[in-house]
Image 1: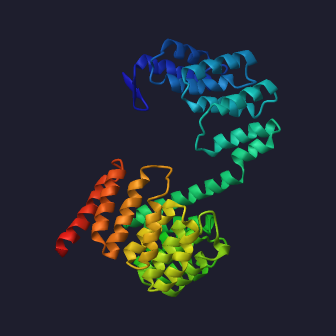
Image 2: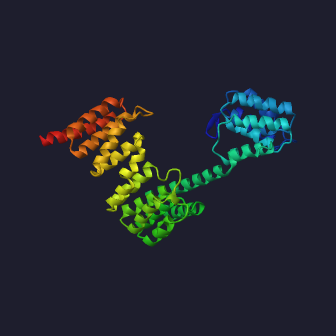
Image 3: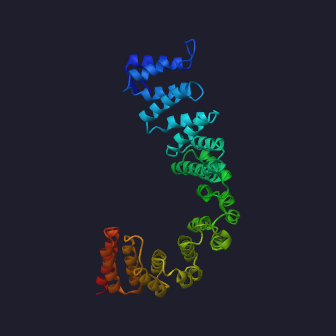
Length: 394
């Protein structure tokens, strides 16, 4: 026995495989031929390197290199033997990009559409090229258009940022980590994750000026920076207890209609801004943006109502409005019954903040009854806290 790429094979098997590869590339043979590899895959149906042998053999059956019938017969057999191997279908499809035969083109499109999307630009580009060759540019745009490119850029930035964050955490390879973060910022100047990671690194190195240069007032006022990034910026600087004026300005910018994106002024973004205003000691501003006027038009949205009520219960203020919202939430229909417990435990927390402990206890018990086992341990913990507070007051 011997090994090929850590796979155990017999020496005879290895010799025949190597001879087949040599014949494929015309090394030591008068002309290139796939015959020996074809004999190999037939002779060794259980070989651990049979699939690899096929991967070399496909080059002899590309459209245009043999008859149409031979090519289709070979690839149909290959697809049947390896139905879950996308690379063989991609081999066939990509070869059709350079062929003029309409039948091959139609078959190539059919084959590549059978493949689950592969996370490579080559797969997507091949698919788009086939559609374009067919004259269907709208379908090409659908798979290889601006949305794909934007997502690809975002993925690249994310990988660079994750790489750098890992090495910064290990406190080694720091020069390259810094270089990769600067590269990510260059690729997508509006992305906040790379900037925040780099700013954190600079602050740990007592390089405040550099931190502010990459993630300071100029960045947060840049056109295109959305509310989510602006609240993240504020949270970062508030946690560092630095650059506080700019943090407050970022929160105001996050509420500006010009900062709107699909997720800008939703429940989460406004709640985050209100929470950060509280941390800045601006409770009045928090109440202004996330108080009764905010919740009134959302009185039929149970999730919004409970999130609002829970927020103010933790702050122990605006409790009358929180109670009204929470009491309404438990009466509304929900898409998922699993949320019923969440609404009732929120009501319990509002009652607890108001000092109405017996009502809080009843609401917590109802949460356990309604939750269907979902988050039940958490609800029981909350019930125990309420009971402990009742016992303490006796």
